Image 1 (cartoon, rainbow, N blue to C red):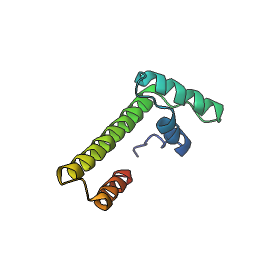
Image 2: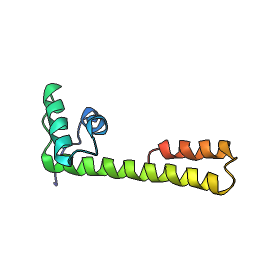
Image 3: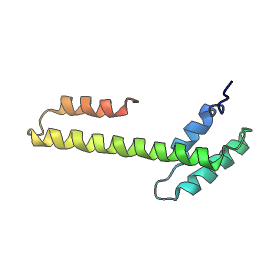
Image 4: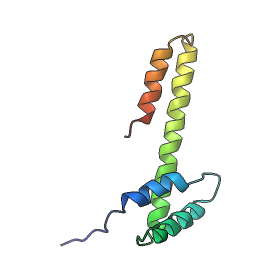
Length: 97
C-alpha cells in the first residue's frame, strides 16, 4: 500500500498566508512558519513542502491582484458607471478556486 505524507494542520496553512511578506525571500517565510509551528506545538514542516505551499500562496495572490485590476479596467473601459457590476466582479475575486 502506498503511503502519503499527512496533510498539514490548518494553522500552518493559515500561518503561511499571514506571515508571508512577498518583499522577503521565500526562505524567510518558511523560517517564520516553522518557528510558528514550533511555538504552537506542531511538527516543523519541511522546507521543501513549505516552499511549495508559500509559492502557491504567492501565485494565488498574484492571480487575485490581476483579477482585481482586470475588473477595474473593464469597468473603466465601459464608462466606469457600472459600480454594482464592479462590486460583483470584486466579490468574485474573493472566492476560492
